[in-house]
Amino acid sequence: MAHSATTIKGITGRRRNLIPLHIILILGAFTMIFPFYWMIITSFKTLGESIMVPPTMWPNSWALTNYREVLRTLPMWQLYFNTMLLIALRIVCAVVFSSMAAFAFAKLRFPFKGLLFFVVITQQMLPPQVYIIPQYLQLSKLNMLNTHFALLYPGLVSAFGTFFLRQFYLSLPPDLSEAAMIDGCNIGQTFLKILLPLTRTALMALSVFTAIFAYSEMMWPLIVNMKVDMMTLSAGISSLQNQYFTKYPLLMAGSAMAMLPMLILYLIFQKQFIEGIALTGTKA
Amino acid sequence: MTTAKIVPRRRSRLLRSEWAWAYLLIAPTIIGLCILNIYPFFNSIWLSLQKMQGLTPAKYIGIKNYQTLFADKLVMQATWNTLYFMLLTVPVGVFLALIMATLLNNNIRGRDIYRGIYFLPLVVAPAAIAMVWRWMFNAENGIINQFLGLFGIAGPNWLSDPNTALVSCAIITIWSSIGYDLVLLLAGLQSIPQNYYEACEIDGAGPLRKFFHITVPLVSPTLFFVTVLRVMSAIKVFDVIYMLIKDSNPAFNKGVSLMVLFYREAFVKFNKGYASAIVMWSFVIIGVLTAIQFIAEKKLVNYD
Image (cartoon, rainbow over all chains, first blue to last red; front, top):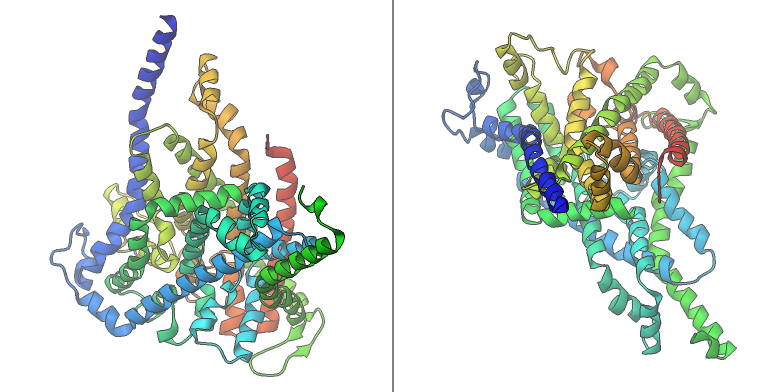
């Protein structure tokens, strides 16, 4: 009896505490959403309405002129294509090459393994800006500036991916690969048919991680692709800002359009995004 | 063990095929890292010892770039700005994320919705985020100063006042990274067994004691990881400052970060030798901070 009384007290105690908790969380959520609301509302206002005092919380009329103007200034579809292509290629490279290397580092014996793995770890310890000028000079020597390849270039291989996936291969029981070998699989078959499919969750997480960072990267695309039709969305709208520094409704329209593709992906795959990021944090 | 039964010759052939597979599988990554990272690292050191301006051929000048750098008031100011930016963003950002994660860990209704909302800025391009905040921070027509005006407060010139420019950038950065940190911390919190809290409750502990005696020590590995992540990204801050504090901004000197300065030297002024010296200087700063973190980890983080 005494025991059940304390439990009930515990539960009611918690219930009471939940209301201030929700208030804080809702205020937080409001702070997170409001800038996006304001971006979208402003993007439909005329320049005149946008600077009215007091500001209108809902546009008087939904003007599409800002969006038209953005489409006239920037090759938006090309930017979407460039960005999505960049993300897709970065994911493919990270998943394919990192899986191969991670499997070898975790499951195979070979000379100089420690030294070679050290190469992978060092890359992660140095700030990426250290590589930027030399990478830029390499591309410029190859005459590859202003290409899709230039955007992809630093992401051809992923040290983070190798390190991260290696943790997963290490956690797979050794009996699995031994059993496959006894059944006559060679090393390549063991990797592709037995172990690789078991890292699906990790590959999903790596893809999300790669996508988020490729999408938000700014300095590199600004540097290598100066031609507007080879830019990514981030670089494109930053050039929009240079052109229309104070035409806020227009800038908001550009921002809203730039945010759209990733936002749609996020709304569809929200669970994978969040669980993927949580996984990269706990395993890395 | 199966290998014990195999005759030595067959065993060595197997071993050699294992080596061959291993080298084949790691080849793309290792070759890629050598071309993309190892060589560029040494190349950057070499470039920092050159005079390499515009299209004129590079010339070896020893440590002259570094001498210029330490006498360069703007670089020193940018170093301070960057460290100040770190102090503004890391403690507040990580603390807020931890508080929010602790609140969400209460088995609360709608937890996934809250988490989904807080994570939202991570899927939006930083350039777009910077622009909407520039608009909200606008001195005359920005919604923030309009709102403050309702209470008779005259809001500052957020982004162009040297005293508030970097603080404004810090607010934006905290706002955009809180969701990421929160997701990592929540994952860490969820691995704390619930009965620890129950035991503590039986002892009559309130929420504050539970937070400091159970939550903080048990989540300390994740907390440490998140802090390191934030320190590194603060030192490398580029996007938000590049977008919001242009050369023409009166707050430029008080707001510019090392990476923005690096970008300007290398790709606006085409002074790649000097820019390399700046990047090596930031590399030294990161090295010192990493060493401090390494010591802190041993003292503060609880890995059992």
